Image 1: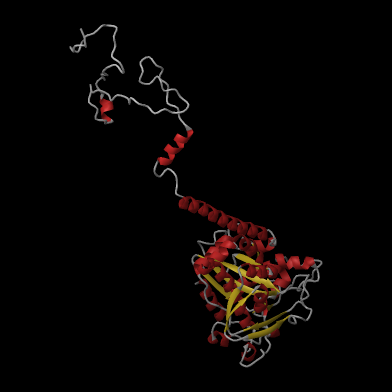
Image 2 (image 1 turned 45 degrees about the vertical axis):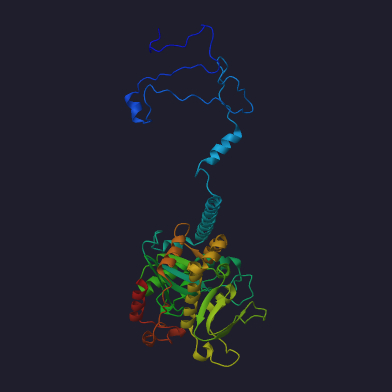
Length: 444
């Protein structure tokens, strides 16, 4: 007798119904943990029968399914079916636009990293050139961005030996000495090259201020008789120039940057030129002017905005005696031009370079030329600021803004009246009160 009390159909014991035999599947009662998973199956319910007709698939025999006693083979996993199944999942593959944006972002980040590495490596190579005694005279630390520090920017009147300009170095070793800020030593004589540009930049801590010192300012030089302030470089190189400026302004110099004229030209060209704004038109012939076989430059600048390439920008910052401009109207020659105007011109070039590097409208150009700008920019200076500090100076310039043009004895008529433009040996005597006021503005 069957346990479930049901009657089986009568018939000969060896006869079986055709097709699939009737059978029932009984399941055990579900445990406590399996009930937590849900499912809603009723214990004892009949399981659904497998489908009668299974589509034929290439690569397998299907005769055993649904026939008693036949072999039961596992389903064959076809490669194209796996691909179809994987592609059917929503969100499994990114749309083409997202893939393009992803790889474009990777390329942009990589290009920026290359530009930054080029800048940092070039800055570090330049820092190796600075004379050891100049580094020892400084008081700064490498963390320039969070705390404002004073940077002495100086340029000399030496020209590369391969130029035809007057003042070109007669010996390559002498040019290398002044380029590195070394004190003069054999085969070079003392007093051969003087500082041509002196500017103190206070950068970091949200500030970026500049103060230009006229090179003819009368100053006390440690270990030497009082003389024009730029003579300190001729006597003792960058180290003595640093100490002289510190005593002259009563401040500490934290970092130094010696301008390299060739590097400055390349930098201006790399950023696409600089724009300067002139109150009057200006004409000048630097070192005899162009076309005289001396490697000079002829300037013809209009009133207002002018875009200068590297050669013109360097010539503009060196003008001392302008010439009359052809045509009608007054020019800078008519109003008079002195070292004070020259210092303002140098600051205008520095501001022009900074504006090119930090302007939002110049982002596409700077991005495309990033590695070349990054490599050329540090070559404009020989500085103690290397791999870690020089990038901070660029960020400090971008954060601190352009700032005004501040020149000792040239910022206001009131201060100019206190200065003696006819000091000893043609120098400019600047009283202590004017220097204190200028330092106060510099410190912000």
